[in-house]
Image (cartoon, rainbow, N blue to C red; front, side, top):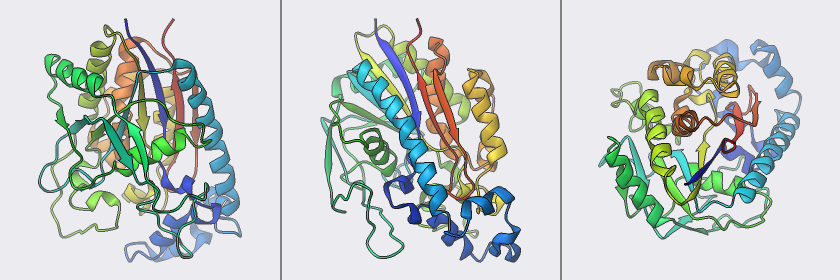
Length: 355
């Protein structure tokens, strides 16, 4: 019988860079013509946001935010190393990287012997070329092994369970994995102890109605004059996908880690807050449900509610949550890192095998 380990973390790119650059999204938001004039003055921000911003534009808070995050990641990486998986399945959103105008599936399993990442491909420094916390060259390329046999078996089993996953033996439009996967792998190996585990990238169209319209939010290309795109898969469908994944893997001979990679709400997706800061009350609700193991509450949420709170990327968490519900696995470690200035609230979680 197989065993399954659940992990959750963010792929927030700011953690790669110096503290003074981590609040760069605030600067971009302040320049937006859509921002109400009164919010251009920090004196009109929420009190906690002003505290985070301080007199150094958030640098001191960024240092603590980063330290807390990597402490959590060290905890879940230790659990991963103890588990020694045969494969690590990473659920990550595609932000107009491999999913583009020519084909947008709800989700896709990538099946390859080897994957490349260029983790600093989209680096954006505020004072010249971006300097990362590892002092890596910006043209760094990292190779990761794939788990083709397990990936093929999973795709076939999902078809037998009533799901129709797209699959691909290559990466469309680019020869490297998208940022959600690249950042997650970089963070899980942030201490540079090495990465020996074969991976299966499982891309999800979490941006749905904004994927093509706003180019996934990566380049600020949004247009109010363009019709919305068709939606992404529903929370219920992604949850049930996770249930099916657990049922497919449990009878197998493999030890598999399932990794949810995404922040909770994102400032640049939260229209109710003028895209200046994330939806902390909604994130606290989702976190309380998650920590209590109340997974059914997640399943019943409509996609429109997630999108209204800028929680589009929670769809990356849903397959893991569905699998944990099916297997009866509750979080042994679950922390929410709250912020107004660092673009998104982040959760780090560990779901060990039951029993």
